Length: 336
Image (cartoon, rainbow, N blue to C red):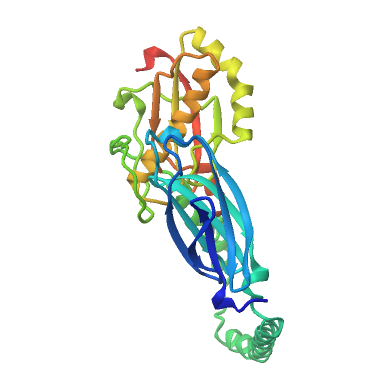
């Protein structure tokens, strides 16, 4: 195997020349700007290589499509690479902070093994030893604590015991603390939603802004969504599953529009990024669904709006994907 410092990640540019992006090693990061070779080029192929002293070989190849949608003859695309601790190379391509492609490549065979089994075994033995010591300490300590507790335990008279038995039982303290927490987990806010913006840019995670009723915003009052579709992180492209969901609900939406109901398409994001970026991304997701409806023969929706991360469903790290969604809501015109 080649020496690790000599290995690099490179991409092909100018039909044959390689440009280095980052070292091929764990926890490395790199970025490079790329542009189409020809003006108004619709598609482009990206080839990513492993470059070493012995030559180079292809790690992955993928295609970028619909490049003219950005309204520029040669849009500047930002290609970024990250190699994690487990040896996975993640490649992303974005235009104006909007991700248009993502690839994951296993490169652990090039960057060496992770923590050795011997090291892992030492850590495991140390943990087991700590557990055994703690258990022994608890066994020898428990009888003494029981004796002390027995010496301190006050005698209870029959009258006191009857008084305690007559009192209504209360839930444990921990359960009493959870009940108000459940009641206030999603309080109804009173501040107005500032509305969507169209600038982009990443930053830190922002707090969730309060939600107000749509009647005060002059929008159709929201009911339960008739259809909800989900998106990949940092993406506004409809997946195959999202298309199938929209096609399944299309007949019902057409019937509702014929009956005079208004259609609102509302985009949402998970709370990871600057407010401006999330508002722009949620708007793009809503527009992707609206364009699908129009292409399917429906009139343009009455409302297309992106709420960013102002209306998250959950803050659970294992369920954040539920926030990356677009909801189609039907409402009567008289609910304005």
